[in-house]
Image 1 (cartoon, chains in turn yellow, red, orange):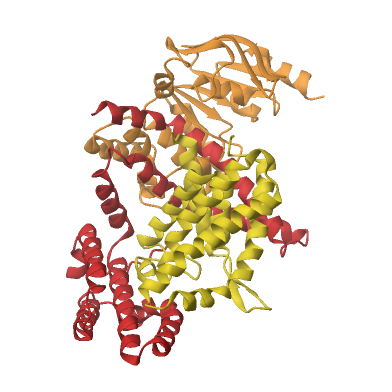
Image 2 (tube, helix red, strand yellow; image 1 turned 90 degrees about the vertical axis):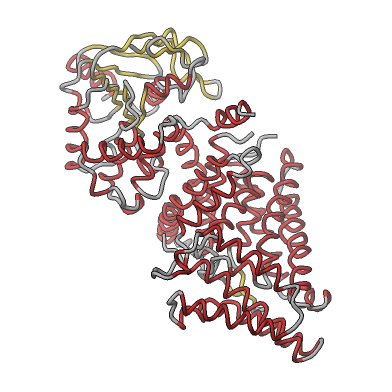
Length: 181
Length: 208
Length: 225
């Protein structure tokens, strides 16, 4: 059941997601693809708050984006961002946060950087693309393989983010654990 | 908090938020059933003229499309190679209409009206969704976005003094820990003002 | 009347408060002590934010463990940092938060807010964004947000720590006028001279209890070495 603290953590993490939107995107020189801090926030939400609260904080964040706050990286917001070709990735964030949280909860007692990174990669990269790419395929009538190839450029950046996120998740677990198992 | 709302008096602005969102959902569903490009062009003209009715300057209207232009260009080129020019125009036009229509709703509706409409919509499902909690969570998030901004700034400055402003880990960790600690105090303050999270559920159950 | 009966509180196996028994019925009670002396825990016991591990706390006959909600309704709480206690984006909305929780009808809420804002001289802040208020304004808003719920007692946990001299005076002049019973935790010893009673905690125990002069002297002799 959700108590007052759960509601507060969900709200604060949604606010943190918004804060990450103001962090300028870092372009990784070797591949030339911009990496935004917000997709890092997805992994952190699940990994720090756990599956349910993590996913709900992303839902809350996206609701605020939908009602017109320009909180996505680059100052984007409003209902328009969901009707574009990348709308699937935004909705995929919810499932991704849930999956990362679910795996982290499973391994909670023996959580280390390896298992946390595994959770971030499976939930925050593999599952996210598994939802985002078919969406692009259908919405833009592009064959699946082409959409997949087009997304590959982002993978190296995502992997770096997953490793970084897992280090943060493990460190927060040691200092201020919020998942009780 | 800066919202994307563009203040003006127009019939589009006056229309209830809930109805605008509903119309948008219908449009989104219908557009994917349409196969003739003539109808699409007609809808596009209609949406653009609604921008005129809403007195939204051209620059601002175009600005709604700009973030999506890059992706739309990729889709356009890909479609030319995969199928033909007509399909490419068709697909890109469909996206443009959806984005413009959705942005029109956002530009002409105040955030507080949008949230009120959302809460009204949710209250239809109040047996499953704790509406008061959702609305508190929404307000808390809006309230604490600037607070977290200040925390991040303070952490950055503290790390700059130590020459660690480029160390992302040294910025993320203190920001997150301070945010979580703040959460404990906020929860206490909520309860001190008689917000009983558990109670709402129990009264909700007794209503049945 | 607030009554504590042999109250014990521990944290991670360490005692934070040991065997505290007392009755509070004075108009203004001050609480002093070093950091970590247990005075903050004491404050949180009074409105049920903290429950005793052993012993009991009761407010006007209501036990904080059994009747938590009634206790919280009677005892308002003002925290040190107003930033963590103002929970809505605008002042007006934040005022309505407590009243909504007490299930007042909507029209009643609006009237009460107008009345309270003008009574405490902050009507001009009504539609301001809480984030943009100054530190002193925030503390006032936090205090009025509690007063508007009309508690019988008000616990203030170091309310002046983050304020400058002028805002401290302004806050204290409002506190002095309040009809409610006040329990104020503070490091500002000079604020307590007019108080009816002062408690001093040291290492989780009640070190001294009495008039301001006597207790403050004992506090300085014991702790300021």
